[in-house]
Length: 190
Image (cartoon, helix red, strand yellow):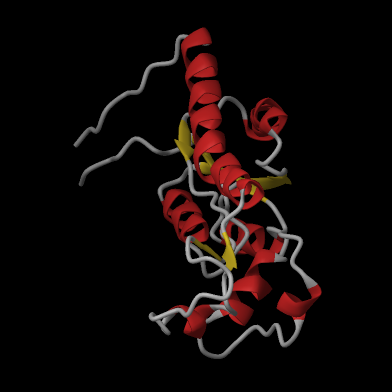
């Protein structure tokens, strides 16, 4: 049997409050290997129109997506702890570049130094390069969302802050701390 060497490793997973999401599945997989799991999450602040008709079950789509984005990580934590794993969570907004070091501080406070980082956080809002008033030829987009707004500097900055900048900053923080403590990964064994 192959031992991946994950027992008691501290795993930090960003973007892990959606019980149906990739971050949750990753957290469960690490927990099944005996890892200690620290979940980052952020409850989206959705517009009132997005809240309208938000539901838990039914066909995938914008309403279901938004219903998951407003959750805390409590449900996911419960699932992972029910597996017998040690797990904690902390909420922070990655649009604030200063939130990354405190995230690692919290993980270390509860579980110890981070051995594995999984960058899974993502942000989305409907925008398009098509100017307002122009006819959309691809009607598939309307199955997912209302007519997207034209891209702006603000919408691009929000997407970039979470989807690109925070990933780079978390990798940098992870590397600094990992090197500072002279950590070494012991590879697979059989």
